[in-house]
Amino acid sequence: MNRAPQSVWRRPVHFFAFGLGSGAVPWAPGTFGTLAAIPFYWLMSELPLNWYLMLVTVSFVAGIWLCDKTSRDLGVHDHSGIVWDEFVGYWITMAAVPFSWEAALWGFILFRIFDVFKPWPIRWADRRVAGGFGIMIDDVLAGIYAWSTMHLWLWLH
Image (cartoon, rainbow, N blue to C red):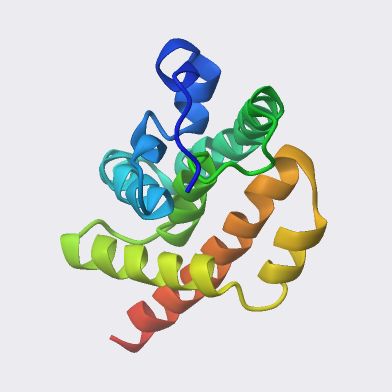
């Protein structure tokens, strides 16, 4: 377990990389980071799809820098408390999914499953891609897998 540094509360870059502080919990920070992304999805779900996707894209690009900067500052590649990638991965999961608490819960479960178990090529990317992009890309891929599963579920129901 990597303890959250005090800089999370003093440096805005670290605060955002730590998912607005949600990654500072001492256990299961990725799960808490994903949970913290749900209220933002609730708000974002009201946006037209092109605006939603633009916001997720900007969050991804900003996340590369946030995660890289925080990782370098802490001297730890992909510190467990860095959860901005979970925010973006969850928002990808929920793209074009009408908001309901049931959908939010299913998206949460699916994203966490793909993020934890990392089927190919997620595990490959997690192990071989470095820097802020490397921190972000495995969660983007997990989000794409979970998004595909969510939309298959929506299509079948």
